[in-house]
Amino acid sequence: MFSTVRYFIKTSLAFLIIGILTGLYMSYLKYIERTGYSQELISAHTHLILVGSVMMMIMGVALWFFPRAEKEDKKYSPDLILATYWVMTIGTGARFIFQVIASFHATSWSGYGVAISSALQVIGMILFFYSMWGRIRPVGSQYREAKGEKF
View 1 (tube, rainbow, N blue to C red):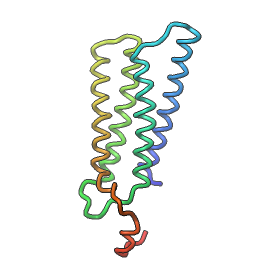
View 2 (view 1 turned 45 degrees about the vertical axis):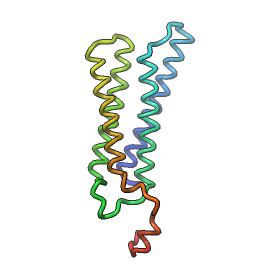
View 3 (view 1 turned 120 degrees about the vertical axis):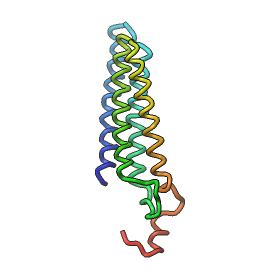
């Protein structure tokens, strides 16, 4: 397993832990404090788990398991994948932070922060799957072995 795959998977697990702790905090607010929580906190919790944990886990595992890019593949770039990791991590982390802030006190800047960080998440996913497109193919290592490649 190479470094970028580990970054995606370990960051996914970190986001999962933070998401679970956020859910525990929400449970505390609802059932112990009896104060409830805002829609912003629900969204922060949901995006951290679904995008930060599940989506980044899928991206990391896909990067690990999918066949290597063919030599002619101009879309796949390890540098682009690493940049995608950072765009996803920063976008997801920032969205969580801005939505938690907005759950306590919504301001125009927190709204802009949520919108911009959401855009980063979308851009990150598009860049990832653009780069991986050539690796999503019906023929795997058998085809490359038939060409004489050793791995």
